[in-house]
Image (tube, rainbow, N blue to C red; front, side, top):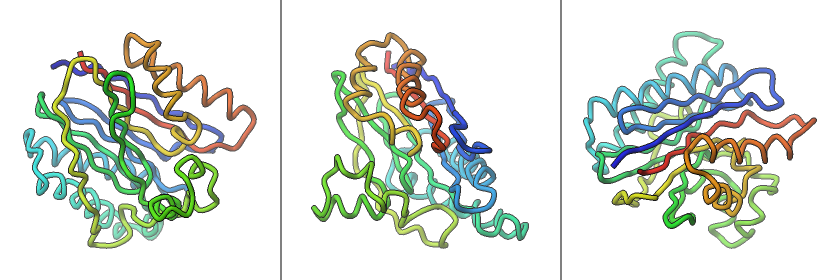
Length: 240
């Protein structure tokens, strides 16, 4: 299978961009440095580099242990970098990544950067946020549709760089890749303004990942004109 990929990162209404992404060799990684902490842009780059290095060494290993090791490797890298400077001591970041051996795909995330998998043009599966609002959804206190506007949405309960032991449950979803499938990795500044039905609509109109992202970015720009919105970043992939 061939993976057609396009990525984009926008600064939004912020003074600097703390998001960072990378893709190549059947690896797709995106991180969102936390705006409430110093040097989030450093944390996001360190985390992405750590996952990329670990994925390269894993050489297509999609086991639970391999995925868990990649998350821990990224966390350890952020914790280690924190110790190099007082200015970096409180930096944190979310992360989401997907890996493929050419036939199968697995993903993992920490925080509220998301992974969506599309089959037959519809959302087939998606990651779960590690946030107070996401817990409220799982408990039935609020609906999924209410999550985007919930006041606790930005209160994250798990991020990289916060503790030595992540204690994150690895998603058990493994997808056998089919032609026509697609997937999306994005930061919260992206999915906050692009609803799942809109992702599907724009996917149906697109012949390549750049078109897909362009349609969705246009939605964000129209909805956030003149506002202090967050950085927004996404990687779109189509299976050919």
